[in-house]
Image 1 (cartoon, rainbow, N blue to C red):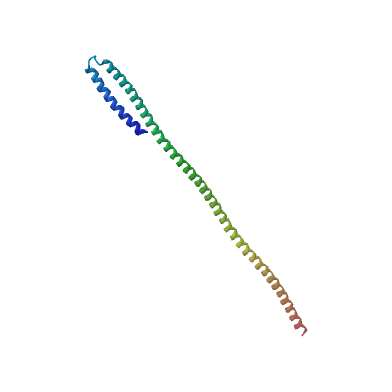
Image 2 (cartoon, rainbow, N blue to C red):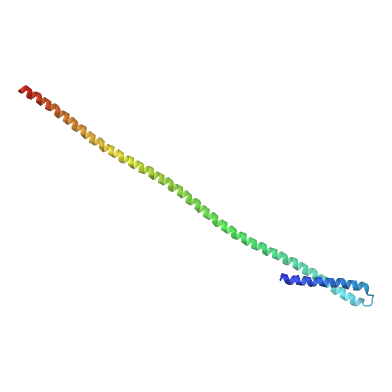
Length: 162
């Protein structure tokens, strides 16, 4: 459509040139063909009006073209905005995953501490068992001491009796 309007504009420009020539002819001619020249002048005036209208149409067409370009740019911006929104959503998900990872790390640390505590508890249990064994050994040692005392007493009695 724009090329058609440009062609029409060129044609009207040519008509304007012809109109200027006609004006010059009017100056050169006498009053003899004045009526015909006036008719041609009126036609020329109408052509000038049409040329102005065509120029306005061309301006409007250019404005329309610019609006279409702006509309396309806006569409692209909207697409980019949607992509950015998705990226922000992914960033939020990534942040949540990082937070969960930190929580998991802390849980693992606590698990390691718990494992250490369990190992200490096992060692404590072993120590308690050793303590019980030692207590039993001490009891046996006391019994042995008592037996030795009794043996000494028996030996002394046997020595007295003999």
